[in-house]
Amino acid sequence: MKFTMSLRRGMGTGLLVLMLVACASQMEPARTALASAQNALLAAGPDAQKYIPEQYAAVQAKVMALQNSFEKQDFSAVIAGAPAVVTEAQGLVAAAASKKQEVMQSLSGEWTALTASMPKLLDTVQKRVAAALKGARLPEGADLQTAEINASNAAVMWGQAQAAGASGRVESAVATARKARERLESAAAALKMTPPAS
Image: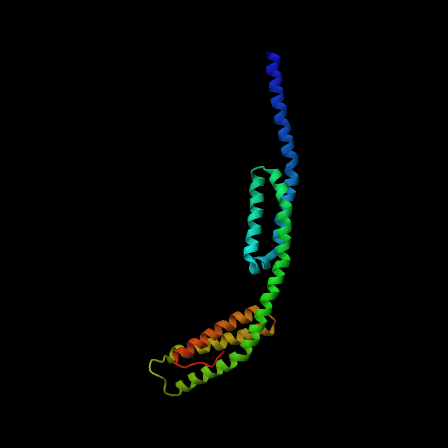
């Protein structure tokens, strides 16, 4: 009886030791696998977050799931799941580059259109403001002060946009030019005038 109890106790202890050894032997491979997934996501960089945010977030969630499994000591889940996550994370680099190229082509086209239309729009609004400041009659309800402020701000912004475009910063150039156009449109509205088509 005592022998049987001792045998059972010894077997229980032995199984526990084996489980602990097996768990410990999987910890380092799991840590390495998790680090590979994290590094692959990091390598995707800001471009992936900016140009393909939904894809980036999906892979980020999978990396977090691996992290949670590791923290729960489910090392086999980490080892099994990490390779696919690494592959997905590495795929973000090419996907982001492709999307960025598409966006930049679109912005380049918009910038070309803006450089053609903005000078005429700016000139028309500035001339109308200047004429009103010299006493030219304005339609009823026109707000010369608002128009003058918006036209002045637009001129500054357009200068900034041109500088950005000249230095190859097309994204910044387009974003600033859009704001300048909005200001000019506000100025035209304040003068109760219809601006030339942009």
